[in-house]
Length: 520
Length: 97
Image (cartoon, rainbow over all chains, first blue to last red; front, top):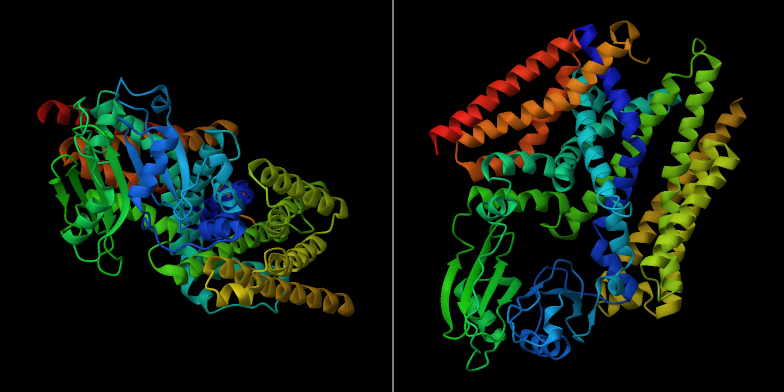
Protein backbone atom coordinates (compact mmCIF):
# COMPACT_ATOMS: atom_id res chain seq x y z
CA UNK A 1 0.00 0.00 0.00
CA UNK A 2 1.38 3.42 -0.77
CA UNK A 3 2.53 5.57 2.07
CA UNK A 4 -0.15 8.19 1.74
CA UNK A 5 -3.03 5.71 1.91
CA UNK A 6 -1.44 3.87 4.81
CA UNK A 7 -1.06 7.02 6.85
CA UNK A 8 -4.59 8.17 6.10
CA UNK A 9 -6.09 4.84 7.10
CA UNK A 10 -3.91 4.79 10.15
CA UNK A 11 -5.03 8.24 11.18
CA UNK A 12 -8.77 7.69 10.70
CA UNK A 13 -8.51 4.34 12.45
CA UNK A 14 -6.93 6.06 15.45
CA UNK A 15 -9.37 8.93 15.57
CA UNK A 16 -12.52 6.85 15.14
CA UNK A 17 -11.25 4.23 17.59
CA UNK A 18 -10.35 6.68 20.33
CA UNK A 19 -13.65 8.52 19.94
CA UNK A 20 -15.88 5.49 20.39
CA UNK A 21 -13.63 3.51 22.74
CA UNK A 22 -15.32 4.11 26.08
CA UNK A 23 -18.87 3.66 24.83
CA UNK A 24 -17.84 0.63 22.81
CA UNK A 25 -16.21 -0.89 25.86
CA UNK A 26 -19.40 -0.39 27.90
CA UNK A 27 -21.43 -1.96 25.08
CA UNK A 28 -19.18 -4.99 24.77
CA UNK A 29 -18.72 -5.51 28.50
CA UNK A 30 -22.43 -5.31 29.30
CA UNK A 31 -23.21 -7.15 26.07
CA UNK A 32 -21.01 -10.06 27.07
CA UNK A 33 -23.04 -10.46 30.24
CA UNK A 34 -26.22 -10.01 28.22
CA UNK A 35 -25.58 -13.42 26.62
CA UNK A 36 -26.60 -14.75 30.03
CA UNK A 37 -29.42 -12.28 30.57
CA UNK A 38 -32.01 -15.00 31.21
CA UNK A 39 -29.76 -17.05 33.49
CA UNK A 40 -28.97 -13.93 35.54
CA UNK A 41 -32.67 -13.11 35.90
CA UNK A 42 -33.49 -16.67 36.96
CA UNK A 43 -30.51 -16.70 39.32
CA UNK A 44 -31.73 -13.53 41.00
CA UNK A 45 -35.19 -15.07 41.48
CA UNK A 46 -33.57 -18.28 42.70
CA UNK A 47 -35.31 -20.43 40.10
CA UNK A 48 -34.43 -22.32 36.97
CA UNK A 49 -36.26 -22.71 33.68
CA UNK A 50 -35.95 -25.04 30.72
CA UNK A 51 -33.23 -23.43 28.59
CA UNK A 52 -35.21 -23.02 25.38
CA UNK A 53 -37.77 -20.60 23.93
CA UNK A 54 -40.62 -23.11 23.87
CA UNK A 55 -43.91 -22.21 25.56
CA UNK A 56 -44.24 -24.78 28.33
CA UNK A 57 -47.63 -23.39 29.24
CA UNK A 58 -50.99 -24.94 30.02
CA UNK A 59 -52.89 -22.47 27.85
CA UNK A 60 -56.36 -23.40 29.09
CA UNK A 61 -55.43 -22.75 32.70
CA UNK A 62 -53.53 -19.61 31.81
CA UNK A 63 -56.39 -18.19 29.76
CA UNK A 64 -58.82 -18.90 32.58
CA UNK A 65 -56.69 -17.02 35.08
CA UNK A 66 -56.18 -14.11 32.68
CA UNK A 67 -59.87 -13.96 31.81
CA UNK A 68 -60.95 -13.63 35.41
CA UNK A 69 -58.31 -10.96 36.12
CA UNK A 70 -58.44 -8.88 32.93
CA UNK A 71 -61.54 -10.01 30.92
CA UNK A 72 -60.41 -11.38 27.55
CA UNK A 73 -63.70 -11.01 25.65
CA UNK A 74 -63.00 -9.65 22.15
CA UNK A 75 -59.28 -9.18 22.79
CA UNK A 76 -56.23 -10.38 20.88
CA UNK A 77 -54.12 -12.36 23.32
CA UNK A 78 -50.47 -13.07 22.48
CA UNK A 79 -48.20 -15.55 24.25
CA UNK A 80 -44.46 -15.77 23.67
CA UNK A 81 -41.44 -17.02 25.53
CA UNK A 82 -38.80 -14.58 24.45
CA UNK A 83 -36.50 -15.48 27.32
CA UNK A 84 -35.35 -18.71 28.85
CA UNK A 85 -37.11 -17.91 32.09
CA UNK A 86 -40.06 -19.41 33.88
CA UNK A 87 -42.12 -16.38 33.00
CA UNK A 88 -43.59 -16.16 29.55
CA UNK A 89 -44.84 -12.94 28.07
CA UNK A 90 -48.53 -12.25 27.57
CA UNK A 91 -49.75 -9.26 25.63
CA UNK A 92 -53.39 -8.30 25.92
CA UNK A 93 -54.66 -5.88 23.29
CA UNK A 94 -57.69 -3.72 24.06
CA UNK A 95 -60.93 -5.44 23.13
CA UNK A 96 -62.56 -5.07 19.71
CA UNK A 97 -65.94 -5.85 21.21
CA UNK A 98 -67.90 -2.67 21.96
CA UNK A 99 -70.12 -4.55 24.39
CA UNK A 100 -67.25 -5.86 26.52
CA UNK A 101 -66.86 -4.49 30.04
CA UNK A 102 -64.64 -1.49 30.69
CA UNK A 103 -61.87 -3.66 32.11
CA UNK A 104 -61.30 -5.24 28.71
CA UNK A 105 -60.44 -1.88 27.12
CA UNK A 106 -57.07 -1.54 28.82
CA UNK A 107 -54.01 -3.12 27.26
CA UNK A 108 -51.60 -5.12 29.37
CA UNK A 109 -48.09 -6.43 28.87
CA UNK A 110 -47.56 -9.15 31.44
CA UNK A 111 -44.97 -11.63 32.60
CA UNK A 112 -46.83 -14.76 33.60
CA UNK A 113 -45.13 -17.49 35.61
CA UNK A 114 -45.75 -20.76 33.79
CA UNK A 115 -45.95 -22.69 37.09
CA UNK A 116 -47.90 -20.46 39.45
CA UNK A 117 -49.72 -18.54 36.66
CA UNK A 118 -49.13 -15.35 38.63
CA UNK A 119 -48.69 -12.26 36.46
CA UNK A 120 -46.26 -9.41 36.94
CA UNK A 121 -45.89 -6.11 35.12
CA UNK A 122 -42.63 -5.26 33.34
CA UNK A 123 -41.47 -3.14 36.29
CA UNK A 124 -42.26 -5.87 38.79
CA UNK A 125 -40.32 -8.48 36.84
CA UNK A 126 -37.31 -6.23 36.23
CA UNK A 127 -34.08 -7.91 37.27
CA UNK A 128 -30.33 -7.58 36.92
CA UNK A 129 -30.13 -9.59 33.69
CA UNK A 130 -32.53 -7.19 32.03
CA UNK A 131 -30.54 -4.24 33.38
CA UNK A 132 -27.25 -5.47 31.92
CA UNK A 133 -28.96 -6.40 28.66
CA UNK A 134 -30.40 -2.91 28.32
CA UNK A 135 -27.14 -1.28 29.38
CA UNK A 136 -25.50 -2.84 26.33
CA UNK A 137 -27.52 -0.60 24.01
CA UNK A 138 -27.50 2.31 26.48
CA UNK A 139 -31.26 2.08 27.00
CA UNK A 140 -30.92 3.77 30.39
CA UNK A 141 -30.28 7.02 28.53
CA UNK A 142 -33.75 8.34 27.62
CA UNK A 143 -35.17 6.97 24.37
CA UNK A 144 -34.25 7.51 21.58
CA UNK A 145 -30.89 9.14 22.43
CA UNK A 146 -29.39 6.07 24.08
CA UNK A 147 -30.39 3.81 21.20
CA UNK A 148 -29.04 6.21 18.59
CA UNK A 149 -25.81 6.78 20.48
CA UNK A 150 -25.25 3.02 20.69
CA UNK A 151 -26.31 2.58 17.05
CA UNK A 152 -23.88 5.16 15.73
CA UNK A 153 -21.18 3.70 17.93
CA UNK A 154 -21.82 0.38 16.17
CA UNK A 155 -21.61 2.13 12.79
CA UNK A 156 -18.30 3.79 13.60
CA UNK A 157 -17.10 0.54 15.07
CA UNK A 158 -17.61 -0.93 11.61
CA UNK A 159 -15.57 1.99 10.29
CA UNK A 160 -12.79 1.22 12.78
CA UNK A 161 -12.89 -2.46 11.78
CA UNK A 162 -12.55 -1.65 8.07
CA UNK A 163 -9.72 0.80 8.59
CA UNK A 164 -8.06 -1.50 11.11
CA UNK A 165 -7.99 -4.33 8.58
CA UNK A 166 -6.55 -1.99 5.95
CA UNK A 167 -3.84 -0.77 8.29
CA UNK A 168 -2.81 -4.22 9.41
CA UNK A 169 -3.49 -6.02 6.12
CA UNK A 170 0.09 -6.82 5.28
CA UNK A 171 0.94 -7.97 8.76
CA UNK A 172 -2.11 -10.11 9.37
CA UNK A 173 -0.48 -13.48 8.80
CA UNK A 174 2.96 -12.71 10.16
CA UNK A 175 1.60 -10.90 13.22
CA UNK A 176 -0.60 -13.82 14.06
CA UNK A 177 2.49 -15.80 14.99
CA UNK A 178 4.14 -12.94 16.77
CA UNK A 179 3.23 -12.41 20.35
CA UNK A 180 5.97 -10.90 22.43
CA UNK A 181 4.49 -10.39 25.87
CA UNK A 182 7.94 -10.19 27.48
CA UNK A 183 9.06 -7.34 25.27
CA UNK A 184 8.58 -3.72 26.19
CA UNK A 185 5.11 -2.46 26.92
CA UNK A 186 4.45 -0.94 23.53
CA UNK A 187 5.06 -4.18 21.67
CA UNK A 188 2.75 -5.91 24.12
CA UNK A 189 -0.05 -3.48 23.30
CA UNK A 190 0.67 -3.61 19.55
CA UNK A 191 0.78 -7.37 19.41
CA UNK A 192 -2.33 -7.90 21.49
CA UNK A 193 -4.25 -5.22 19.63
CA UNK A 194 -3.51 -6.68 16.20
CA UNK A 195 -3.40 -10.42 17.00
CA UNK A 196 -6.49 -10.46 19.23
CA UNK A 197 -8.23 -8.00 16.94
CA UNK A 198 -7.72 -10.43 14.10
CA UNK A 199 -9.02 -13.41 16.06
CA UNK A 200 -12.13 -11.46 17.00
CA UNK A 201 -12.59 -9.91 13.57
CA UNK A 202 -15.46 -12.03 12.15
CA UNK A 203 -17.27 -11.84 15.48
CA UNK A 204 -16.85 -8.10 15.74
CA UNK A 205 -17.90 -7.53 12.15
CA UNK A 206 -21.16 -9.41 12.70
CA UNK A 207 -21.92 -7.46 15.87
CA UNK A 208 -21.14 -4.09 14.30
CA UNK A 209 -23.45 -4.70 11.33
CA UNK A 210 -26.33 -6.29 13.22
CA UNK A 211 -25.99 -3.81 16.08
CA UNK A 212 -26.32 -0.90 13.66
CA UNK A 213 -29.29 -2.65 12.06
CA UNK A 214 -31.14 -3.08 15.37
CA UNK A 215 -30.66 0.48 16.56
CA UNK A 216 -30.50 2.79 13.55
CA UNK A 217 -32.34 0.79 10.87
CA UNK A 218 -34.65 3.82 10.68
CA UNK A 219 -31.98 5.50 8.52
CA UNK A 220 -32.50 2.80 5.88
CA UNK A 221 -36.19 2.17 6.47
CA UNK A 222 -37.38 5.77 6.32
CA UNK A 223 -36.13 6.50 2.76
CA UNK A 224 -37.58 3.22 1.51
CA UNK A 225 -40.95 3.97 3.12
CA UNK A 226 -41.03 7.46 1.61
CA UNK A 227 -40.00 6.29 -1.85
CA UNK A 228 -42.08 3.17 -2.32
CA UNK A 229 -44.83 3.05 0.28
CA UNK A 230 -46.17 6.60 0.31
CA UNK A 231 -44.92 7.20 3.86
CA UNK A 232 -46.90 4.31 5.33
CA UNK A 233 -44.42 2.03 7.10
CA UNK A 234 -47.17 -0.50 7.85
CA UNK A 235 -47.22 -1.31 4.14
CA UNK A 236 -43.49 -2.05 4.14
CA UNK A 237 -43.68 -4.20 7.25
CA UNK A 238 -46.65 -6.10 5.82
CA UNK A 239 -44.73 -6.77 2.62
CA UNK A 240 -41.76 -8.03 4.64
CA UNK A 241 -44.11 -10.25 6.65
CA UNK A 242 -43.61 -8.54 10.00
CA UNK A 243 -47.30 -7.84 10.54
CA UNK A 244 -49.63 -10.80 11.02
CA UNK A 245 -52.92 -11.08 9.23
CA UNK A 246 -55.91 -9.67 11.11
CA UNK A 247 -59.13 -11.65 11.32
CA UNK A 248 -62.19 -9.37 11.74
CA UNK A 249 -64.74 -9.72 14.53
CA UNK A 250 -68.03 -11.42 13.72
CA UNK A 251 -69.62 -9.65 16.69
CA UNK A 252 -71.40 -12.84 17.64
CA UNK A 253 -70.45 -14.93 20.62
CA UNK A 254 -68.68 -18.23 20.11
CA UNK A 255 -71.26 -20.97 20.72
CA UNK A 256 -69.19 -23.62 22.46
CA UNK A 257 -66.02 -22.78 24.40
CA UNK A 258 -62.86 -24.29 22.94
CA UNK A 259 -59.70 -25.73 24.44
CA UNK A 260 -56.52 -23.93 23.32
CA UNK A 261 -54.43 -26.91 24.38
CA UNK A 262 -56.35 -29.09 21.95
CA UNK A 263 -55.24 -26.79 19.11
CA UNK A 264 -51.57 -26.77 20.12
CA UNK A 265 -51.68 -30.56 20.27
CA UNK A 266 -53.18 -30.63 16.81
CA UNK A 267 -50.45 -28.30 15.50
CA UNK A 268 -47.73 -30.43 17.03
CA UNK A 269 -49.08 -33.43 15.18
CA UNK A 270 -48.76 -31.62 11.84
CA UNK A 271 -44.95 -31.74 11.76
CA UNK A 272 -42.36 -33.87 13.50
CA UNK A 273 -40.60 -32.22 16.50
CA UNK A 274 -42.57 -28.99 16.09
CA UNK A 275 -42.32 -26.79 19.22
CA UNK A 276 -44.79 -24.01 19.94
CA UNK A 277 -42.98 -20.72 20.56
CA UNK A 278 -45.67 -18.14 19.98
CA UNK A 279 -49.41 -18.32 20.18
CA UNK A 280 -51.95 -15.67 19.40
CA UNK A 281 -55.66 -15.80 20.01
CA UNK A 282 -57.52 -13.25 17.89
CA UNK A 283 -61.02 -12.13 18.87
CA UNK A 284 -61.26 -14.16 22.05
CA UNK A 285 -64.76 -15.57 22.60
CA UNK A 286 -66.05 -14.30 19.24
CA UNK A 287 -67.57 -16.51 16.53
CA UNK A 288 -64.60 -15.55 14.34
CA UNK A 289 -61.98 -16.39 17.00
CA UNK A 290 -58.72 -17.63 15.45
CA UNK A 291 -55.75 -19.36 17.00
CA UNK A 292 -52.39 -18.65 15.40
CA UNK A 293 -49.64 -21.02 16.42
CA UNK A 294 -46.03 -20.33 15.50
CA UNK A 295 -43.00 -22.37 16.30
CA UNK A 296 -40.01 -24.12 14.90
CA UNK A 297 -38.22 -27.39 14.50
CA UNK A 298 -34.84 -28.05 16.18
CA UNK A 299 -31.98 -25.87 14.91
CA UNK A 300 -29.99 -29.03 14.24
CA UNK A 301 -32.66 -29.98 11.72
CA UNK A 302 -32.85 -26.65 9.91
CA UNK A 303 -31.41 -23.26 10.89
CA UNK A 304 -34.47 -21.18 10.15
CA UNK A 305 -37.28 -23.72 10.20
CA UNK A 306 -40.25 -21.70 11.34
CA UNK A 307 -43.75 -23.05 10.94
CA UNK A 308 -47.20 -21.61 11.41
CA UNK A 309 -50.68 -23.03 11.77
CA UNK A 310 -53.88 -20.98 11.98
CA UNK A 311 -57.14 -22.52 13.18
CA UNK A 312 -60.64 -21.15 13.17
CA UNK A 313 -61.92 -21.84 16.66
CA UNK A 314 -65.61 -22.33 15.84
CA UNK A 315 -65.06 -25.07 13.25
CA UNK A 316 -61.61 -26.34 14.24
CA UNK A 317 -60.61 -25.92 10.62
CA UNK A 318 -56.95 -25.40 9.69
CA UNK A 319 -57.20 -22.21 7.60
CA UNK A 320 -53.49 -21.55 6.98
CA UNK A 321 -50.25 -23.44 7.35
CA UNK A 322 -46.56 -22.91 6.74
CA UNK A 323 -44.45 -26.06 6.82
CA UNK A 324 -41.24 -25.61 8.85
CA UNK A 325 -39.54 -28.32 6.79
CA UNK A 326 -40.29 -26.56 3.50
CA UNK A 327 -37.79 -24.21 1.88
CA UNK A 328 -37.61 -20.96 3.85
CA UNK A 329 -37.85 -17.83 1.71
CA UNK A 330 -34.81 -15.56 1.45
CA UNK A 331 -36.62 -12.72 3.23
CA UNK A 332 -37.59 -14.93 6.16
CA UNK A 333 -34.08 -16.35 6.45
CA UNK A 334 -32.44 -12.94 6.60
CA UNK A 335 -34.96 -11.65 9.14
CA UNK A 336 -34.20 -14.62 11.34
CA UNK A 337 -30.44 -14.81 10.83
CA UNK A 338 -29.84 -11.12 11.65
CA UNK A 339 -31.17 -11.82 15.14
CA UNK A 340 -29.77 -15.32 15.67
CA UNK A 341 -26.17 -14.39 14.91
CA UNK A 342 -26.31 -11.42 17.25
CA UNK A 343 -27.96 -13.26 20.14
CA UNK A 344 -25.78 -16.34 19.71
CA UNK A 345 -28.64 -18.51 20.92
CA UNK A 346 -28.63 -21.25 18.30
CA UNK A 347 -26.03 -23.65 19.65
CA UNK A 348 -26.52 -24.01 23.37
CA UNK A 349 -24.17 -22.95 26.13
CA UNK A 350 -20.95 -23.68 24.26
CA UNK A 351 -21.61 -20.92 21.76
CA UNK A 352 -22.75 -18.50 24.46
CA UNK A 353 -19.57 -19.07 26.45
CA UNK A 354 -17.41 -18.59 23.36
CA UNK A 355 -19.36 -15.44 22.51
CA UNK A 356 -18.89 -14.16 26.06
CA UNK A 357 -15.14 -14.73 25.83
CA UNK A 358 -14.96 -13.06 22.43
CA UNK A 359 -16.88 -10.13 23.90
CA UNK A 360 -14.35 -9.73 26.69
CA UNK A 361 -11.55 -10.20 24.19
CA UNK A 362 -13.00 -7.27 22.26
CA UNK A 363 -12.94 -5.21 25.46
CA UNK A 364 -9.26 -6.02 25.71
CA UNK A 365 -8.65 -5.06 22.09
CA UNK A 366 -10.35 -1.71 22.75
CA UNK A 367 -8.26 -1.01 25.84
CA UNK A 368 -5.00 -2.11 24.24
CA UNK A 369 -5.82 0.26 21.39
CA UNK A 370 -6.22 3.10 23.87
CA UNK A 371 -2.94 2.16 25.59
CA UNK A 372 -1.21 1.95 22.24
CA UNK A 373 -2.47 5.42 21.41
CA UNK A 374 -0.99 6.71 24.66
CA UNK A 375 2.34 4.90 24.50
CA UNK A 376 2.94 5.88 20.89
CA UNK A 377 2.62 9.54 21.92
CA UNK A 378 4.85 9.31 24.98
CA UNK A 379 7.85 10.70 23.24
CA UNK A 380 10.36 13.38 24.04
CA UNK A 381 9.45 15.35 20.93
CA UNK A 382 5.82 15.68 22.05
CA UNK A 383 5.06 18.90 23.93
CA UNK A 384 4.86 18.31 27.68
CA UNK A 385 1.37 19.79 27.86
CA UNK A 386 0.01 17.45 25.21
CA UNK A 387 1.57 14.42 26.84
CA UNK A 388 -0.01 15.30 30.16
CA UNK A 389 -3.36 15.79 28.50
CA UNK A 390 -3.14 12.38 26.79
CA UNK A 391 -2.23 10.76 30.05
CA UNK A 392 -5.19 12.32 31.80
CA UNK A 393 -7.54 11.15 29.05
CA UNK A 394 -6.31 7.58 29.43
CA UNK A 395 -6.62 7.73 33.20
CA UNK A 396 -10.26 8.76 32.91
CA UNK A 397 -10.91 6.09 30.26
CA UNK A 398 -9.38 3.36 32.37
CA UNK A 399 -11.12 4.45 35.55
CA UNK A 400 -14.52 4.33 33.81
CA UNK A 401 -14.04 1.09 31.92
CA UNK A 402 -12.19 -0.98 34.49
CA UNK A 403 -14.67 -0.05 37.23
CA UNK A 404 -17.32 -1.97 35.35
CA UNK A 405 -15.99 -5.36 36.42
CA UNK A 406 -16.14 -4.75 40.20
CA UNK A 407 -19.42 -2.82 40.12
CA UNK A 408 -21.08 -5.56 38.08
CA UNK A 409 -19.92 -8.21 40.56
CA UNK A 410 -20.98 -6.07 43.51
CA UNK A 411 -24.45 -5.56 42.02
CA UNK A 412 -24.92 -9.34 41.85
CA UNK A 413 -24.28 -9.41 45.60
CA UNK A 414 -26.53 -6.42 46.24
CA UNK A 415 -29.58 -7.90 44.53
CA UNK A 416 -29.20 -11.08 46.60
CA UNK A 417 -28.89 -9.26 49.89
CA UNK A 418 -31.84 -7.01 49.06
CA UNK A 419 -34.41 -9.37 47.51
CA UNK A 420 -36.92 -6.62 46.77
CA UNK A 421 -34.38 -5.11 44.35
CA UNK A 422 -36.20 -3.75 41.32
CA UNK A 423 -35.43 -1.15 38.70
CA UNK A 424 -34.81 1.83 41.02
CA UNK A 425 -32.53 -0.10 43.32
CA UNK A 426 -30.45 -1.62 40.52
CA UNK A 427 -30.15 1.74 38.75
CA UNK A 428 -28.97 3.60 41.83
CA UNK A 429 -26.68 0.88 43.10
CA UNK A 430 -25.00 0.27 39.75
CA UNK A 431 -24.65 3.83 38.52
CA UNK A 432 -23.77 5.47 41.84
CA UNK A 433 -21.35 2.64 42.65
CA UNK A 434 -19.78 2.97 39.21
CA UNK A 435 -19.38 6.71 39.70
CA UNK A 436 -17.85 6.31 43.16
CA UNK A 437 -15.36 3.71 41.96
CA UNK A 438 -14.42 5.87 38.98
CA UNK A 439 -13.93 8.94 41.15
CA UNK A 440 -11.95 6.90 43.68
CA UNK A 441 -9.60 5.60 41.01
CA UNK A 442 -9.23 9.09 39.59
CA UNK A 443 -8.26 10.48 42.99
CA UNK A 444 -5.65 7.77 43.34
CA UNK A 445 -4.48 8.95 39.90
CA UNK A 446 -2.38 5.93 38.96
CA UNK A 447 -3.44 3.61 36.17
CA UNK A 448 -1.38 0.67 37.27
CA UNK A 449 -3.26 0.88 40.56
CA UNK A 450 -6.64 1.18 38.77
CA UNK A 451 -5.89 -1.85 36.64
CA UNK A 452 -4.72 -4.01 39.53
CA UNK A 453 -7.32 -3.15 42.10
CA UNK A 454 -10.27 -3.18 39.71
CA UNK A 455 -9.29 -6.76 38.89
CA UNK A 456 -8.76 -7.66 42.54
CA UNK A 457 -11.97 -6.05 43.80
CA UNK A 458 -14.00 -7.62 40.99
CA UNK A 459 -12.53 -11.04 41.64
CA UNK A 460 -13.09 -10.93 45.39
CA UNK A 461 -16.68 -9.78 44.88
CA UNK A 462 -17.03 -12.47 42.20
CA UNK A 463 -15.93 -15.19 44.62
CA UNK A 464 -18.34 -13.83 47.21
CA UNK A 465 -21.34 -14.13 44.83
CA UNK A 466 -21.84 -17.92 45.10
CA UNK A 467 -21.03 -17.83 48.81
CA UNK A 468 -23.60 -15.16 49.57
CA UNK A 469 -26.12 -16.90 47.35
CA UNK A 470 -25.49 -20.11 49.30
CA UNK A 471 -25.86 -18.47 52.69
CA UNK A 472 -29.01 -16.55 51.80
CA UNK A 473 -30.94 -19.11 49.75
CA UNK A 474 -29.39 -22.42 50.77
CA UNK A 475 -28.69 -23.07 47.10
CA UNK A 476 -24.99 -23.64 47.48
CA UNK A 477 -23.36 -24.45 44.21
CA UNK A 478 -23.30 -28.20 44.93
CA UNK A 479 -26.93 -28.12 46.09
CA UNK A 480 -28.14 -26.38 42.93
CA UNK A 481 -26.13 -28.82 40.83
CA UNK A 482 -27.54 -31.84 42.65
CA UNK A 483 -31.12 -30.57 42.55
CA UNK A 484 -30.78 -29.61 38.91
CA UNK A 485 -31.47 -25.90 39.45
CA UNK A 486 -29.24 -25.39 36.46
CA UNK A 487 -29.49 -21.66 35.82
CA UNK A 488 -28.61 -20.87 39.45
CA UNK A 489 -25.71 -23.30 39.31
CA UNK A 490 -24.54 -21.84 36.02
CA UNK A 491 -24.27 -18.25 37.28
CA UNK A 492 -22.47 -19.31 40.47
CA UNK A 493 -20.00 -21.47 38.54
CA UNK A 494 -19.62 -18.72 35.95
CA UNK A 495 -18.55 -16.20 38.60
CA UNK A 496 -16.10 -18.61 40.19
CA UNK A 497 -14.35 -19.19 36.87
CA UNK A 498 -14.43 -15.50 35.97
CA UNK A 499 -12.95 -14.61 39.36
CA UNK A 500 -10.19 -17.19 39.00
CA UNK A 501 -9.27 -15.62 35.67
CA UNK A 502 -9.48 -12.13 37.20
CA UNK A 503 -7.28 -13.13 40.12
CA UNK A 504 -4.78 -14.77 37.82
CA UNK A 505 -4.57 -11.56 35.80
CA UNK A 506 -4.15 -9.57 39.01
CA UNK A 507 -1.24 -11.76 40.16
CA UNK A 508 0.41 -11.46 36.74
CA UNK A 509 0.13 -7.67 36.77
CA UNK A 510 1.32 -7.54 40.37
CA UNK A 511 4.42 -9.64 39.68
CA UNK A 512 5.17 -7.71 36.54
CA UNK A 513 5.13 -4.42 38.46
CA UNK A 514 7.28 -5.84 41.24
CA UNK A 515 9.92 -7.10 38.85
CA UNK A 516 9.87 -3.76 37.09
CA UNK A 517 10.42 -1.95 40.36
CA UNK A 518 13.21 -4.32 41.33
CA UNK A 519 15.03 -3.76 38.06
CA UNK A 520 14.89 0.03 38.35
CA UNK B 1 4.49 6.17 15.70
CA UNK B 2 1.36 8.22 15.15
CA UNK B 3 0.43 8.67 11.50
CA UNK B 4 2.77 10.90 9.55
CA UNK B 5 1.08 14.33 9.47
CA UNK B 6 2.47 15.17 6.06
CA UNK B 7 -0.27 13.00 4.51
CA UNK B 8 -3.13 14.39 6.58
CA UNK B 9 -5.49 17.27 5.97
CA UNK B 10 -4.98 19.89 8.64
CA UNK B 11 -6.85 22.90 7.23
CA UNK B 12 -10.41 23.41 8.38
CA UNK B 13 -12.47 23.59 5.17
CA UNK B 14 -10.84 20.72 3.27
CA UNK B 15 -11.13 18.62 6.40
CA UNK B 16 -14.70 19.64 7.08
CA UNK B 17 -15.80 18.89 3.53
CA UNK B 18 -14.16 15.48 3.65
CA UNK B 19 -15.72 14.51 6.96
CA UNK B 20 -19.18 15.64 5.87
CA UNK B 21 -18.76 13.86 2.53
CA UNK B 22 -17.70 10.73 4.40
CA UNK B 23 -20.68 10.70 6.74
CA UNK B 24 -23.51 12.28 4.73
CA UNK B 25 -22.34 11.90 1.13
CA UNK B 26 -21.66 8.20 1.59
CA UNK B 27 -25.04 7.79 3.22
CA UNK B 28 -26.87 9.41 0.31
CA UNK B 29 -25.02 7.28 -2.21
CA UNK B 30 -25.59 4.04 -0.29
CA UNK B 31 -29.29 4.70 0.25
CA UNK B 32 -30.03 5.90 -3.28
CA UNK B 33 -28.06 2.98 -4.73
CA UNK B 34 -30.09 0.44 -2.75
CA UNK B 35 -33.37 2.16 -3.52
CA UNK B 36 -32.47 2.15 -7.22
CA UNK B 37 -31.91 -1.60 -6.99
CA UNK B 38 -35.21 -1.97 -5.16
CA UNK B 39 -37.09 -0.14 -7.86
CA UNK B 40 -35.88 -2.55 -10.56
CA UNK B 41 -35.44 -5.86 -8.75
CA UNK B 42 -37.84 -7.83 -6.47
CA UNK B 43 -38.52 -5.29 -3.77
CA UNK B 44 -38.88 -7.20 -0.45
CA UNK B 45 -35.71 -9.18 -1.19
CA UNK B 46 -33.67 -6.08 -1.98
CA UNK B 47 -35.01 -4.17 1.02
CA UNK B 48 -34.22 -6.96 3.47
CA UNK B 49 -30.74 -7.24 1.93
CA UNK B 50 -30.28 -3.52 2.49
CA UNK B 51 -30.66 -4.24 6.21
CA UNK B 52 -27.04 -5.31 6.21
CA UNK B 53 -25.47 -4.20 2.92
CA UNK B 54 -26.82 -0.67 3.46
CA UNK B 55 -24.47 -0.16 6.40
CA UNK B 56 -21.57 -2.01 4.80
CA UNK B 57 -21.65 0.08 1.63
CA UNK B 58 -22.12 3.27 3.63
CA UNK B 59 -19.10 2.59 5.81
CA UNK B 60 -17.04 1.28 2.88
CA UNK B 61 -17.58 4.57 1.05
CA UNK B 62 -16.89 6.47 4.26
CA UNK B 63 -13.43 4.93 4.39
CA UNK B 64 -12.61 5.58 0.74
CA UNK B 65 -13.77 9.19 1.00
CA UNK B 66 -10.70 10.03 3.04
CA UNK B 67 -8.42 8.97 0.21
CA UNK B 68 -9.77 11.77 -1.96
CA UNK B 69 -7.38 14.61 -2.73
CA UNK B 70 -10.13 17.22 -2.55
CA UNK B 71 -13.17 17.26 -0.32
CA UNK B 72 -15.14 19.35 -2.76
CA UNK B 73 -14.45 16.98 -5.63
CA UNK B 74 -15.59 13.93 -3.67
CA UNK B 75 -18.75 15.80 -2.66
CA UNK B 76 -19.30 16.48 -6.36
CA UNK B 77 -18.92 12.81 -7.21
CA UNK B 78 -21.31 11.78 -4.45
CA UNK B 79 -23.94 14.32 -5.47
CA UNK B 80 -23.66 13.15 -9.08
CA UNK B 81 -23.97 9.47 -8.11
CA UNK B 82 -26.95 10.23 -5.88
CA UNK B 83 -28.59 12.12 -8.74
CA UNK B 84 -28.05 9.21 -11.15
CA UNK B 85 -29.45 6.68 -8.68
CA UNK B 86 -32.40 8.94 -7.92
CA UNK B 87 -33.14 9.18 -11.63
CA UNK B 88 -33.00 5.36 -11.80
CA UNK B 89 -35.42 5.14 -8.85
CA UNK B 90 -37.97 7.33 -10.60
CA UNK B 91 -37.46 5.62 -13.94
CA UNK B 92 -38.02 2.30 -12.19
CA UNK B 93 -41.11 3.55 -10.41
CA UNK B 94 -42.50 4.92 -13.66
CA UNK B 95 -41.56 1.92 -15.80
CA UNK B 96 -42.55 -0.80 -13.34
CA UNK B 97 -45.72 0.87 -12.10
